[in-house]
Image (cartoon, rainbow, N blue to C red; front, top):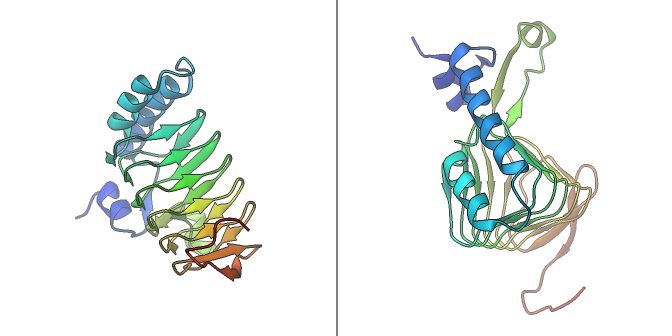
Length: 191
């Protein structure tokens, strides 16, 4: 029989109140406390904590605290990724972020979700859908990336957008729900 953690990682219905998962979240909270109350400007110490927290992190990683996540061990980021203040990643299933991607303040990325059926939902079961963000993506402040979404390389998510569906490469999306606003010409320098 699968453990609740195995079910969670597989995107199946699971109970978050499971003892093992509760311990994992507590361990993440301890690292987040150290990260969020670190002395400003100590990027080497920040990187050291993030290396313990995340499954993988590339070189030249940047983060402005505070930062929040569920477990950390489901987060994989490439090189030269930057998170501005107050970002939240609910990582019950994998969140994968490519190289040179940037996240404005208050960006939320959710791999966690709940059943639509009220009876199942009232049993406290939940599940997740992985989120994938490509290379050279820019996510504006206050944007929300919903469970199961993939954002293509070089795309831009406008500030405040709520992304509920996959985003192709080389586009700008905005609104709620986010829709394609513009195709990006990669030779274009400014809007």
